[in-house]
Image 1 (cartoon, rainbow, N blue to C red):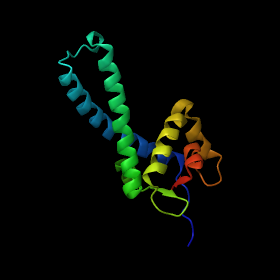
Image 2: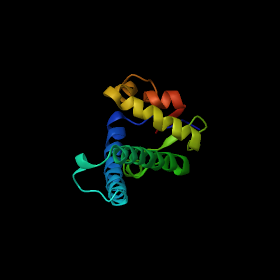
Image 3: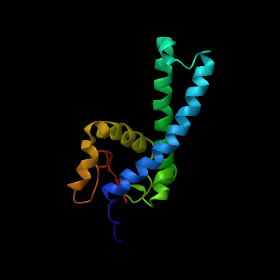
Image 4: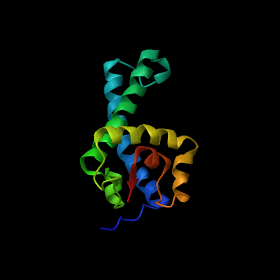
Length: 139
C-alpha cells in the first residue's frame, strides 16, 4: 500500500480558513453566553478582569475541543472535509485523542510567525513542524 502524498501548503491554509469561519461562529456563541453570565455590557472595556480570563480560556478550550475531537474521531475538521485533506498517524489511522491534543498545542506554536507551516515547503513529505513533532501527517 502506497502512502498518499502530503497536503500542499495552500490546501492546509484553505482548510484552516474554512475552520476559522466555523470557529468564529462557535466563539461568538460562547462569548454571548459568557457575557450573559457576567450580566455584562457590550463594552468589554468595562468588564472585570475575570470576564476576560474566562472568555479567553473558554475560547481556547472550545478551539482545542473542535480540533482534537474532529481529528481523533475521523481525521478531519469541517474545513478539511471541504478541501479533501485529513490527518493520519504513522499507521495510516486518525490520530488518538492524546496525539491530536499534542498536535493542537504544537500547531498553536507553529502559528507564531507561521514558521511551522512554512516548514512543509522544505519537508520531503510536506509535513508541517507540528506534524513532525506529533508524528502525524496531513494527506
